[in-house]
Image (cartoon, rainbow, N blue to C red; front, side, top):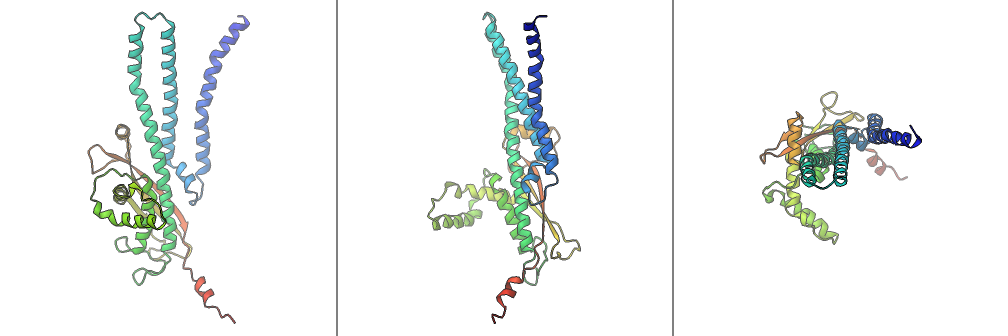
Length: 310
């Protein structure tokens, strides 16, 4: 075997090895990142979101879809190049047939990429929502809510004003990824739209078009499809001054790509839920939690204000 043939044989195996290493590198890097981020504190909600089980699943789907898309595109490119190199007699029909056979797989991979990317963004928003709700909880719980809810006491969600503040913090956290296409009565959300309109007017800003209707539909969906749960204190009665407070948020993230939603459901993903407002509309149940330390009753400001100036 001469030198030219040796170089040609070397290229035959070097290229696949290099491409294989390039394909495996994101998988190894992602595994290392998840392993390092698993022990992140609750305050680092972004790291916890990116290392959550849903993020890992979506990352694997993104990686596999990208690799398959590149491989399939490369095969089609080589087939087309080989067809162009051969005499044209009767080859055009074969090329069109090959393209028609590969097109459904290409579309499926692209749709998987789109939906998985949307789920990654939704997962990040829901984890941020849990962090916002926990931040609200450690401030609201030690506050004085009258005889019904004294310091460090949180009553049942049906009667608790403190819980309303905690839930509202979570709701506004998921608003960016909340679905805004459901038809509802606009009268229920007119008050929030008018309040925000006054806010924009006070700062001399232009009233955005999404303020009327679209904002209300997103808010309605977030209220209907987001559940907030505050873990009870250790003694079952009231929280200690520096006890950890855990807030859990469950949000049904609307899956905008119906074909992929049905595929996930057919594969047995129990977190894919059918929505009640439309036939064939699905959502992915995203779970997130955050634990922060109760700030306790803050009375040092009053003591400073009542100090004897003399």
